[in-house]
Length: 249
Image 1 (cartoon, rainbow, N blue to C red):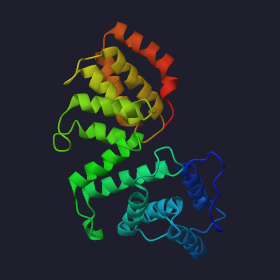
Image 2 (image 1 turned 45 degrees about the horizontal axis):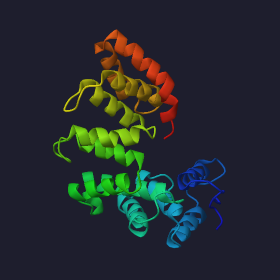
Image 3 (image 1 turned 60 degrees about the horizontal axis):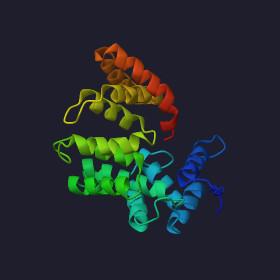
């Protein structure tokens, strides 16, 4: 269909969605073009998750269309409902998993004006599905944080460390930082200062130039200032050696 990128062999669904986003942002494309919007809507009606995802992002942000959280939620929920059992390593799995995360966020906070009311139990279940079935790193990070919140999944540092570790090993800088702080401080689990400092330093390097750089760097610098010099030296060596293994996210 005109106006949509073709999937290259070996290309992930998110890569294709990003190509579509770049096309929408390109100077040669009019974001207000009815033809472009109709093309995406036709593709969405035909069941193409990439088109639904892009429309969801557009209505969520108000880019190219009037902002409409209700319509954004509709597209994300349509992806999740229609593809909940998609094979975890399939082409569309990453978009499906992120649609579960999006829905979880909507239910976590609620958007009453869009007829979406807060339902924390449902939000947690959606996040857990994305984390456990799809193995989505961002969802695993969210679940790890929830296990440190008594008002979410309860305070369970061992479970938190488990989920944060899964995401950290996939290169998620937020998970790396939270896991590092958990291990360094030893709150509720056995303290492992060297490994904790290692993760914090890996996270600080990974987060450079991103929106998470500030809080992650602050967390890492605080731990480094409180650590013993031998632990710092060992952690930096480990970060240099192992960091490249956990750099893809």
